[in-house]
Image (tube, rainbow, N blue to C red; front, side, top):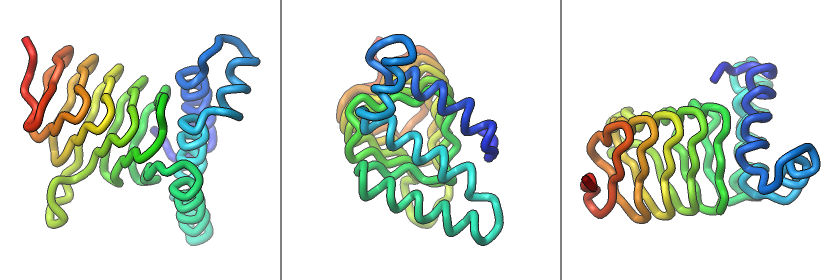
Amino acid sequence: MPRTVEGATSAWSADLIANSRRPGLLGSVAGWLLSPGQKAVTIYRWSRSVAGRGTFGKLASKLLWRWNVRTTGCYLSPLADIGPGLAMPHAIGVVVGEGVTLGDNVTLYQHVTLGRSRSDQAVYPKVGDNVIIYAGAIIAGGVTIGDNAVIGANAVVIRDVPAGATAVGNPARLLS
């Protein structure tokens, strides 16, 4: 996702639709006002859009990120690359680290963590489009989650998950 206001606005529109429980303008406005997930994603978009704009942009991005963590309980790094349509139906305790890439229309449930597996390695997960990651799942290290995959609740994913697959357990295994 480009770090521009235009890119953030376009992605935000898709996020609004993804987090709305009712169709139409009224449902979208209600989603923005009432959904903690939408609030977290909106603040992330603002933070990301200003992050690359010099010293003031870096400071503003950091302040927005801190505000997001304090008000929503979600750690969405402005250095993560999150595609449009991010849905967070139960947005609490969600962590998306700085090098993580999320595709379009990804759904994250509560207490999901995506980040590096070791502090001395800067490799992060890459998640494809239309992926659902259920509550408590951990995806760590340089793994790739293919398009349309499903990660089960409390799964610990440390290996790649192919497109269309379902991964469950600790460590995660693929269901046939």
